[in-house]
Image 1 (cartoon, rainbow, N blue to C red):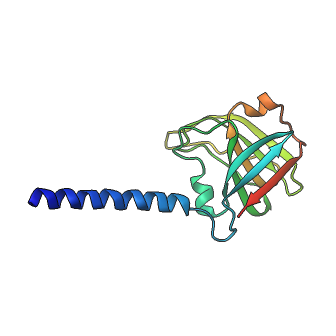
Image 2: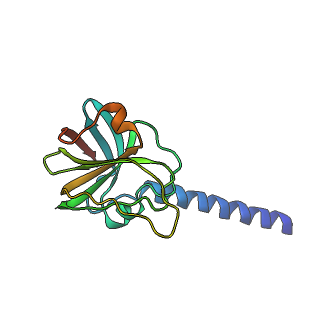
Image 3: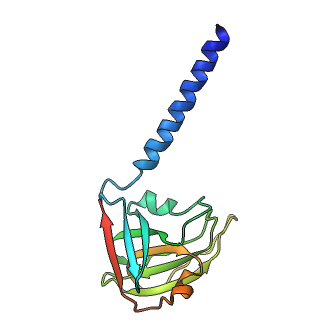
Length: 158
């Protein structure tokens, strides 16, 4: 009987953990913007994006993610246009990082930014202002021929 109760308690604990993991994964989006996801298109190439609009979401970004589909990305939304630097701390995949201004035009591209696992990681800080930043898999900017001045189409979903 004691073994049965211990097993039952273990099952309840495991199920509770699974529930909370899925609950928080599904609700970890910005309550201030209301945006969860969307799409960003550049030159007929579209990416389904997860939106990072709060400081906490932007800080976490793509850290600890080991895979991203070719048509996926992370889209950082800022309150106003400014100079925003990025780094690759605890990022597991190489990325192309694309800065986009408030006119929805590409102003800077950092190609194939490499993961950083050390204590000191270099920041990527373009000398251009942007309102948005798109992170996609490394190498896709060259593959699709993205360049500074290209227009983007941004659609965010609630």
